[in-house]
Amino acid sequence: FLHPEDVGKPRAQVTVPRVSELNPYTPVNLLKSTSITDDLSQLKDFQCVVLTDTPLKDQLLISDYCHKNGIYLVVADTFGLFGTIFTDFGKNFTIGDYNGENPVSGIIADIDSDGIVSALDETRHGLEDGDFVTFSEVEGMDALNNSAPRKITVKGPYTFSIGDVSGLGDYKRGGLYTQVKMPKFLDFEPLSQQLKKPELMMSDFAKFDRPAQLHVGFQALHAFNDKHGHFPRPHNEQDAAELLKLAQELAGSGDEKVELDEKVIRELSYQAQGDLSPMAAFFGGLAAQEVLKSVSGKFHPIVQWLYFDALEAVPTSVKRSEELCKPTGTRYDGQIAVFGKEFQEKLANNQQFLVGAGAIGCEMLKNWAMIGLATGPKGKITVTDMDQIERSNLNRQFLFRSKDVGRLKSESATRAVQAMNPDLQGKIESMKDRVGQDTEHLFNEDFWNSLDGVTNALDNVDARTYVDRRCVFFQKPLLDSGTLGTKGNTQVVLPRITESYSSSQDPPEQSFPMCTLRSFPNRIEHTIAWAKDLFHTYFAGPAEIVNAYITQPDYLGAALKQSGNEKQTLET
Image (cartoon, rainbow, N blue to C red; front, side, top):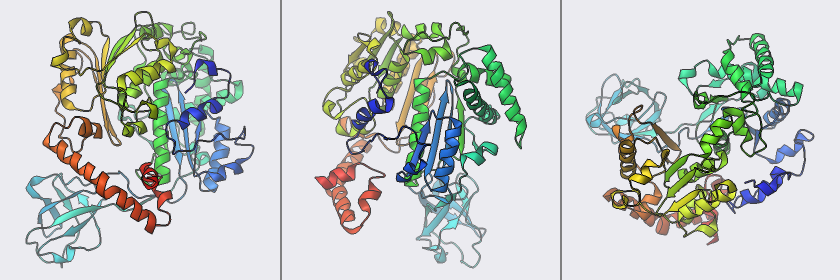
């Protein structure tokens, strides 16, 4: 959102009008106060507070106030390839739906005298320990039908136990089981208590002891900043030694002693002034998701700390030193602080091919623009997408605005990222051609041989498989990823090192991206889903919204927490 001409201006003031463009239904205002901690009472107007790049002493003040006043708090910080999220949603926080999935249901094959339920034809029941189920249409054990939900224990992929069934009779035949989402209640502690006895969420079991070390290391970073007025300098050995000493003192002072890995703490010091766009995007997305969880009660929140590092991204083939990582006065200084100048030069002269400019494609282009990919004399990005922008794309494909509806995605995305980073002018070629056998005269041997890497941002398996075959043939690295609702996947394919994308078989799709249904329905299932969606749009959805608006006094306020379409429907 920030441009070269904005240097020297207040970031918040410049950002507000540009964020407002993303969704006209979301009011964005600038806080008039210059300091939150001078008057904490101004926070009473908010349901949730998010802190980023905030000193620890201010985090503690705000956390205590929010906890006492029932205000949800999310804290996010990144230092180079390290990052953390902290959440405090107060006492007795209610989760109405812990996973957002439709309730599982299935057909019963048998219920034995010990209460073991077997699914029909060895179909996976899809339940977990602690889930609750109800029964219907059961013959023999009629008392089970429409009774109170029963807590289950999973015995295997096809069987589960419902406990004591004595006195219910003998099972004869038939019956359905249906999962019931029961509310879950959590108690959160304020930051001051969690610093001493943290509840750490595990994100990588290959780094089992890393979260506890980073919990100490991040506190040491804040202590260093309080003492010197800045974080440790990039690859400065004196600062690294001081940070290590601070961390060792903190590690030995708590109730539970933490054994530190000196290399990790030194790396944290080296990267403390680093600022990486991909890490900011990752933790910004996590923080935004936690905000949605807090106000909606949907999905299980992070409890209460998540520490993450991507030290695997540090290249072993590129030299790093204080001289090579010092600031150069460019927009890439935050990245040079982590990886060094030589690495930045390699990025600038990289040639990448992006297939697809939808939601993932927009994120990739934005990240590439921010890190300076292909901005050098030999760099180039080629992006192709045959789709046009639809209004429904605007809620997740953030490079596009209302004025872009009807235009080609590849062309609009290219213009947007060139505005973000003028260094990309003349470095991106946008195309509207499908990648397949019928376009091999365009994407020919010379084209593939010129590439350093390929990134898939596609919404169907067939296109992914074709690109994968070409990457295998020309021995090019491939990054593949996809999303479906709140789920996502990613795969890194390296020639002669990893398996290819096509080497493993994806499970059958249970649902389909809307852009596939509307633009290129190519299977029977697609046409059925398309017709069902169209019927709901014309005949069911608007009527349901209007009826709910008339009969439920607080409908609009509750509905707008989860969707932005209700207001538009009511206005029309």
